[in-house]
Image 1 (cartoon, rainbow, N blue to C red):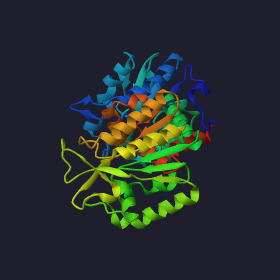
Image 2 (image 1 turned 90 degrees about the vertical axis):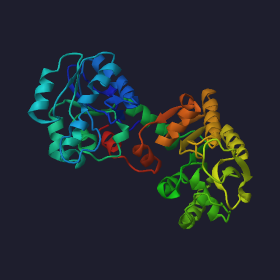
Image 3 (image 1 turned 135 degrees about the vertical axis):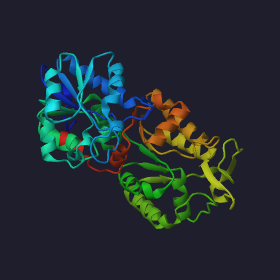
Image 4 (image 1 turned 60 degrees about the horizontal axis):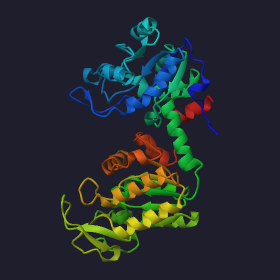
Length: 400
């Protein structure tokens, strides 16, 4: 059962609706190089416009250090937003609060969108200042948050503003929260989590949370080497945080108490250097040469994970299984990604993945479109995996 309202619950006809978006998209030479966050905003915008709302878009962009910076103006995104909306006129205001913003809101016509200037040009945004939130609220009559990727920030446009107006989740926020709820809060079981990446130290909180929530946890990538080392396995010249061995043992002990099975690689693709085009050697995990590095999982581990996936109902994935940017050490990540995609397409698995490297690996494997849901939320997705309460979500839940 949802703990938040959606835009279906808001009466928006003829009303000014503030939509918190995340237009913090990558750009090069003034051109958007990845418009995913813009395209995911479109369903909410079109829905509100079709229902007669006056749509006013709020967003941050970059990290301005002291007030307005021309290079970080949202003006540069007006055309990209207009194209994504199929030619709907997109107006721009030179400020996000005060007389300039109010005048632009007053001129907003039917079936038009107004994009306000970068929220972070004002210190009150990141300070979650009540007066800044009140100034934003004065521009609208309802609030929609469609920026899950900013939901982990207790900023004025994310947290305080949601408590000042009738508030709801937009379509992208709704889809993200529904997917995460289905994947971890109320999953179909068995539930497998796959966590990879380079270092255990960056994902300790995630591992500590997941061992209490999942039926099995596959630890892969460079961070698996630390767990292998903690078990007394020699890992050669592989990346390994030996100083984290005790924490690795503590996580395994917590998993045993929780009834969670920890899965580590049983074989690996190894080499004496990380270089594209090398002929990878496969080694049993207990026989890694002293001068070699573990750079990917091996075929026996791939087969074991595929077999485990075939028994699961839900999988959550964050982090590649090897050095996927450098073929042939992408083989393990690609094989597991395709296995998950195939099971998902067959209706046998609900699959949720997130994290920049993970999404890049899935794209390289040609498997991303086979997953149930891909999160582009970055830090918010990781904090969700850690089990933290996200301020932007909590604010919506408080108004439901």
